[in-house]
Amino acid sequence: MRKIFQRIFAVVPAVLLQFAWMFLLLRWLAPYAAVLNFILTLLALLYVLYIISSRHESTYKILWLLAILAFPITGTILYLCFGNRKTLRPIRKRLEKGRATLTEATMATDVREELEEINCRVARTFCYVQELTGLPVMRCENAEYYPLGELAWQEMLESLKAAKRFIFVEYFIVEPGLMWDSMVEIMSEKAEQGVDVRVMYDDLGSISTYTKENVLQLRRKGIQCMAFNPLLFVTGTANYRDHRKMLIIDGNVAFSGGINLADEYINHVEKYGHWKDIGFRLTGAPVQNYTRMFAEFWNAFSDNPIAVNQFTGTTEASHLIGDGYVLSYYDSPIYPEPVSNNLYIELLTLATDTAWFFTPYLMLGDTLLDAFVRAARRGVDVRIIMPGIPDKALIYRMSRSYYSVLLQAGVKIYEYTPGFVHAKGCIIDDEIGTIGTVNLDYRSLFLHFENNSLFYKASLLADMKQDFLRTQQKCRERTMENIGHSFRKWLVDGVLQIFAPLC
Image (tube, rainbow, N blue to C red; front, top):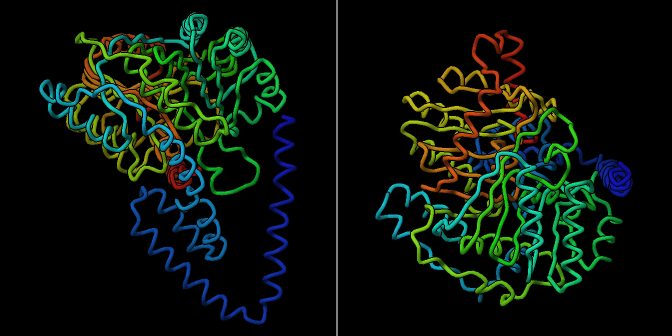
């Protein structure tokens, strides 16, 4: 809490100064109020036309159109500061710099042509993701699925002990406790042995859990540590957070999934009942994608970049057929299209039998919502597992506002009665699926930096399916009969969905 108050006291004076300046400016310009009002109204109209013609999700457009039309001056200023993609420019420039440092690095040869011979339609979906992200599809040499965070954590500790060259850590939330402290103990020992250990965390995600003193403690142990996009002032860039989660060891092992580095994720402490999360471990050549993802971000924001030759050639592509295929990528608001949002639309379009999803939040844009509805109406068994105990009451209520339209279409929704579901993943027709950090909400799909792994014909998917069915047995199914019907509910649902892009 102390860190939050420190940030508030740092930001509030700047905000008050801005309001004071605007007040003085308006008083000075008072004689010209009629002319100014005409000019600002005209500008507001131009921004309305600009928003309508943009490729944003319709829900996002409606939110800003209402704001600008209701409050032309205030709405336009807010849009310029927080709604306009041009606020991404500082981050875009840094990431371009980070990517430029890796241009010399070689990647394992992708296997798109091989995948096209097996299933051309699926190959096209992989190709779409590859073309936007620049990361290749590879043979999945070995992937292990973890149905709970505590199981992943134990394997993470064992892999850390085996590190010989480098350890890269990047998470949205880091909090001292049993999980993090046990990892730091091993990483500090490895740093003493000459292993390059680097930690990156999101400044806003960890604002109440990780302090400057924690960072200094790491650095004293020989561990490099950096915060992503520090929240020093209230600017448009504050919207774009690093929600990625990855642990990479020697370029040969990578862990990812929904699990952050805090004790509730391993059920050592209980915040919202039993914490249901999922994760996975990759080994072999596919780990190169994760190494590149981390290096690109680190080099973009750090003064001590990772050398290209540090991770080039640490893995070799297997000559075996392997265990299916995998494409690990990161999603970014600077991409010309929302990769994960469009990928899920693709997967729902591909589905012929089943489409099962884990997600902690359910706030869908119109295009993805329509994809869920169409899949269910053409007879696909569409299921969504949601939390039974919320971590954020308002977000939970917003998520439930989407239940009616989905249930009416035939989508089955289950709520995990023992506690909170933080898992993010899907399985389509038992053959293709994803596990990563992407929630089914606006922030994950359009604003955050996320990472995801897309699997095809990997045995990991069978393990995920069995876990889904076991988890479903601990859930309460929601139906049109038990969600309630009233004009008040319909009205509240509509209002909540308008403001969903802000949450």
